[in-house]
Length: 458
Figure 1 (cartoon, rainbow, N blue to C red):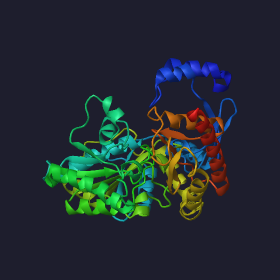
Figure 2: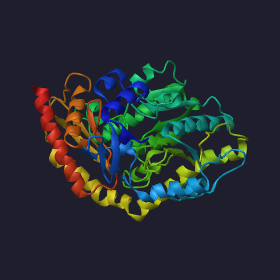
Figure 3: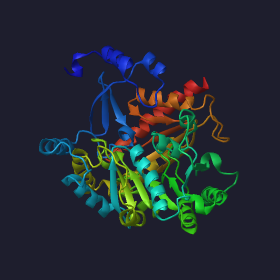
Figure 4: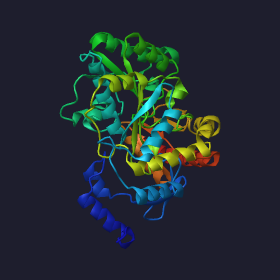
């Protein structure tokens, strides 16, 4: 039996009766009823009532090649017929993770050429945390196990991922975090820059908060710093150009490993295969997932630098870690074709040279001067719109993010799927967006902002 045999109300009732959603107030959801998305094509998604929505979030930061890619479905089907599953334990492998590992080593930043597979970014960050601490133990320095992260960072929602992340609400529900993880200020100039502070100087100050934490803990006790090149789920917070070079300098000075979380930024979003390449960062680990398969299959890949990998191989013996679906042959088959599409269609170059700059220009020209917009910012095809009550003072509307929800709801009603994070509207569209799609998005967002302002100031 297919969903077409059920009415929308029946689907909503079944959903309410049995389905616990991620990051959801379930009482509120069950009162309102779920929005049921039934199909998608190109840059658009469609709900059960036939409404077309321009997807400004690429699903959840992941559908980089857009919807309806028959090649990806065919790759999954062909692999399922030949070998639907076998594990990577017991000295076994299957062809597709072998070939995908080779491809990832070819496109990764220099010196990063080993891959460990999982099924999600959360799993990949769990692996990264464990691997980094294991590395220092193998090097005879087990006390070097403190990880420095940032406030409002997002590194997944597993116990380790939540602990690495810096979201207070998530910590409040954890009931006990993984120990020895320290959080410092984020590079969020819109709210944290001092009056009159230059962008360059703010970037240096934000980076030196990491150095202060290292010195407070003692460099011999600090294993690594973890950070997203651009903080995604926390509100597309783009650091000043001075930030990452200073972070790199600090990590090298104190012999601290650099863990880069590129679950959102990898595979073309910033106009390069990895944001590390866009920003000149030289990491020891790179966490990836999401756009590795454009969301068509669950798959994550932790890319590991030679320093850690060589110690693991030479000194590690058995690494007591792994997942049932590590290197799943179907997911890896889809990933191989997905990367081929990105390459063949020049999506990375398009973002870097055409749509990324046009996206920035369109947001600035159409939205930056709006009465409830305090700032717009973007990098590649990632964007943020800060919602404020007063543009001059940057005073927010009351309600701790309620204003952005008003904007979001108007956007969806006007055919534009956006996400509200705190008082920030965020965008992360499929890389197949064109200038025409960007103009359509700007028009619909501007309309939503007008309607929201009328509501909010009423």
